[in-house]
Figure 1: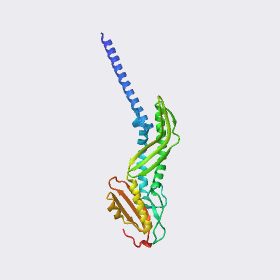
Figure 2: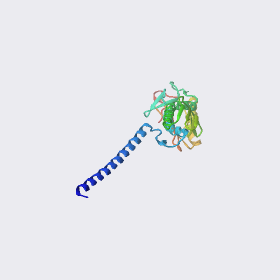
Figure 3: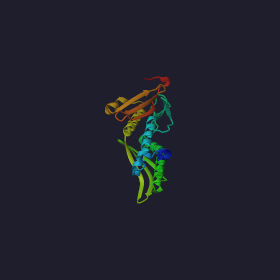
Length: 268
């Protein structure tokens, strides 16, 4: 082999290796770009791509963060997502659950059936999120070759009972491919002490509306897992915070009862 042929063969081999390396680099870039596209186009279901995760499991994972978020907002604002008739306390709107404009008089209950009201508030808060979850579930299964029927009507029902906040999403939907899967409701529960916090608030409001005030130490003596803070303000309002020390859940509300003019009778 002469010198020129040797150089040509060496050059040819080098170009072949470079071509292979370039192909590998291009393939790696395509894989990365595809992964990024999938992540941003399907962020809510990216964690279950390529698996056989059941629709019920997906719905629970999708809507659970919104349940925590809704409960957090409601518990800080006296049981309301968007309260009216509130006091601005430490930058937070806190709903009056018992209120009177008069001096020397007990307050009037502003929200009877508090537990039912909070259930309704949380249900309405979750509806838009549930619709988004259902739509994402439909798109995901259509991409996998399923025929998707229904899922156009979505209703959310929340029940708050001892130890549990239950969520039921009613959204009739059918998936067809090799077999048929039909779903009408998706149910799951979240461990919570919200019921006991709300019932304690109801009891305090009952004392405020009857006697004009309440004694928080009694509750803590009978229920050692509860921590109550009672902040009396100069305008005659009182802000109550009820906390479960084991779960760190808290419920805050306001009352204005047996108020004195000009701050008389105010104690910090």
